[in-house]
Image 1 (cartoon, rainbow, N blue to C red):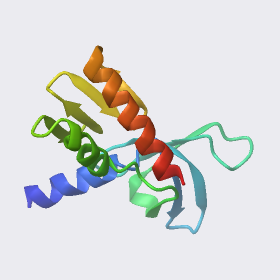
Image 2 (tube, rainbow, N blue to C red):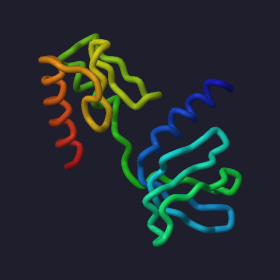
Image 3 (cartoon, one colour):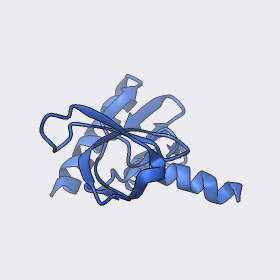
Image 4 (cartoon, rainbow, N blue to C red):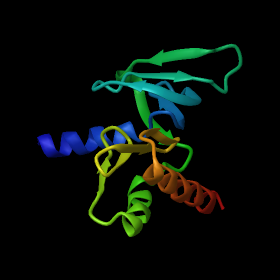
Length: 136
């Protein structure tokens, strides 16, 4: 049971920071950026498509479904790309949404967040190329 719960949590975290569409049990639909979610599926949305609403919290017991409206960033594919240049030195940390290179350089969907030096420069070049290719 705990493995399934952990997997559900990992999948849910991938929705954070992404555009979602939420349908409630009373057939209302909210579209916006998911910025918070808890174990009861209470959610916080911002940048709502409904004019006049800046931010909203929706009680998880009223949520019928949450749809991801944009493709999630593929950390595993990025890690595979890094491993061609740095074999055996790559760790994927889906729980924090990052790839760790050589235990010192942290790369997220936004680029390098920790680490400097020649290796970080090479990683940035690989990351930039990966992003260009996946946006096509």
